[in-house]
Length: 601
Image 1 (cartoon, helix red, strand yellow):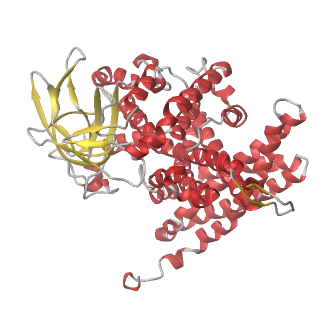
Image 2 (cartoon, rainbow, N blue to C red):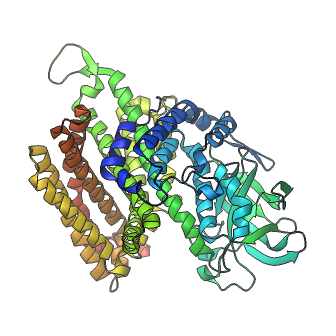
Image 3 (spheres, rainbow, N blue to C red):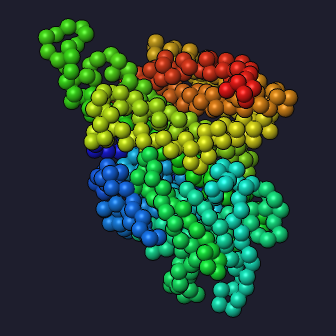
């Protein structure tokens, strides 16, 4: 497997030219996020990921985590790497200073998280789940719970999990059966006894941290049926004494870990609660509002999984590029007696450009959404907060769904660049595809993301936020019309066709949702892909305009800026070109989807 080198030049370009780092740094609480500090953070993170996390990626995949009588052992080197991760303060980057965090913007944490995921996806899943649990406690936890759990979780010496589904439930959380019975005693105070089984719990048991803090969905005795009867509980692996020290082992145990296609180093646990008297848990917020609270974790996790799509694509691209430059095979089509590196062959170039262009588009969109989340949380202007929250809410399912679907394609293309050697595990290219395959499934399948997009995020509000985005895209198209050169004209043509496709689909979804909801949902995944492609093209067009201005001003690395324009042109010609076809699939495709009876399949 090739080395990982963080793409710092592109990250900095996106942060400054597209996501508006300078503006985010002016928000209340973000004043310390100067360009100099951010550069230092990115440099140090890049070094840590290259020298500590990346070398464990392939060996961790080969060894995997191991279960033995309820205990889970992570692969060799993971304990030491996690200690360095915690000691370096990486887990605390974006969390509030009052609980030991560094309080940096989401926009600054985003490229750092991308690096973790690209260097070692399995390792990165542990802090991902801890971060989601922290977010839920910050927003809905009682002060006593925050005081007890957050400092250690922010530090990273305790980790967190999300316990949602059960064997009979899958993604339908209305079927959750875990029980939470209220109790009270002098030593433990008001608490609940939790009984049930949870599956697919990432890092539900491991040897990296002193304690594991589980956030668990369960039903109280008088809870109504369905999703309205689910509550959220905090259930630590070890109970916490009044002085903050760890006490007795709680009644929660790991029955097994799953044997998976990929992410072998990440233990995916089956957890049993209450084999004896019941696991001791504490209510988060109010009874019967657990699913609402869990969605706080889910939104953070969905954005983070979208970043996994960016990260895996980057890692697969770097490996394919290195191989294409060193692998010598076949003569140059234009002539010559000797075999040449395969990067000189047109179709290999096409594959590499496809990987590069889509990765850069996904990165740009994700960082822009991260900036919107910062504005939504911190800007003093209430109207601006509402507008940016609506944008982020609409785009998170796109970032999650499109980026993960695309990363499977990019990782597969990476194998194709390697030829037969890509199919051999020792090369390392196959691991990227195996690891990528889960990303479209966990934290909500692509269809769950697309159903959310067309329903809650679009039809419910009459497409208002989507129309604002379309308006912003039209402004970029207009700016492209004033720019000089054939490349800019081609980018404009591709973006214009993409915008028209999105406009048509938004209007159709809004008009059709009430009278024929199944028709809309039949095309929801193609629509999500369309939104990703066109919104990615919007960001690539902005990047091309910014690069052209830098070239005109003779400001910076001219080769990088010329490559940015060329990559945006490729994206317009090869990726945005798919938009009209996707539009037709969305608007006309439902009849074919629903045509057969069940017996005809």
